[in-house]
Length: 433
Image (cartoon, rainbow, N blue to C red; front, side, top):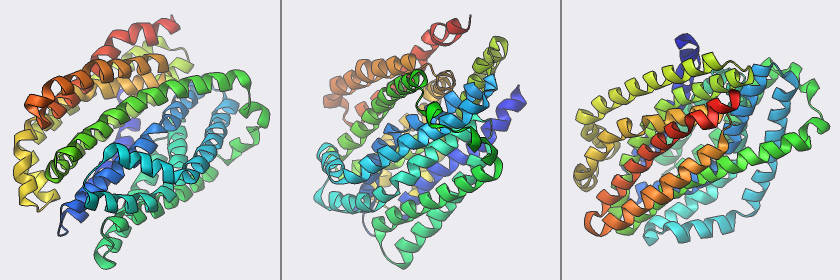
């Protein structure tokens, strides 16, 4: 079983690790320019796209869960129909995003705020990068579908290709064409279309034979569509809570001052670095949980869950030991702004605590997604957001300031794992008994 987990987890770790590395490279590119406002512009612009992409990340999650279950059932027709159904939804969503990009930008900047200099740069960043949205959302679906088909190698190749192209283009636009944060946005948009092309090539090379099973009747099956939208709605609400927490985090950082915004933007990358890394095992959990639920193999499911937590705990301990002595060095690599580095020192202990406090929430997310146990996921995030994060911040902010923001984030992660542990037997095991 460990071999099956690693066969899926390792390629996903490689895929996922390129995402935070890209974020770090983007920040490093602008972090060595002549002002901290470029870091803030990337951070605020990035938050808007986190809102958009995380908001529609249910497309990847539900596609993986449904596909893995159909794969476990050996239902070939449904596996390819799930892909067609999800891509049709992406097409509709993409048109709406492009049509309403102006009001999306206006509302986003009203909520997030920031200094006039940072906001001006962030608006330009948004207006360029938004044109990559159709490709980015399509990649969500393709990568989720490949993983549901128990194939983690193709998403790995696509992710590496996208991020290498992105880094090269962004560096060229920033340092050769002197486009600062706008160059990063353009590099990202172009690379997303390159990634979509690569994913399509792999699909037609390995899965073209499945396209004969696609039909309008299958895509529009009312019973299946009802469950499809119910699960996606629950996952959207769950994801919206995560977006709300991270958006609030950046917004409150920006409202303090540009230095704190830069500090928190850099430190949050270390949280994301760990999260994308452990998500390699969470993604393996999605594929294997869905597969064994579809095949009705309860013993194998329980074994997968147990082993995933062993791997998650070991990884969390490793990152804690890495961050404990090394976080100051990482900051110096990311930016040459002395004021930002010095201002970050009081907040470094929070980053050291993040891996241990949060690993269970990520592992459980993968298991719940594979099981399409969307209602339990939704309720978990509603509790963690509104009964934990928000009260902690508002009660302690007057005394602790930025420390209250970090404590709220830490407890938000911790309680997600605790609540999902409590709900596990009822939400996942009981329906199989």
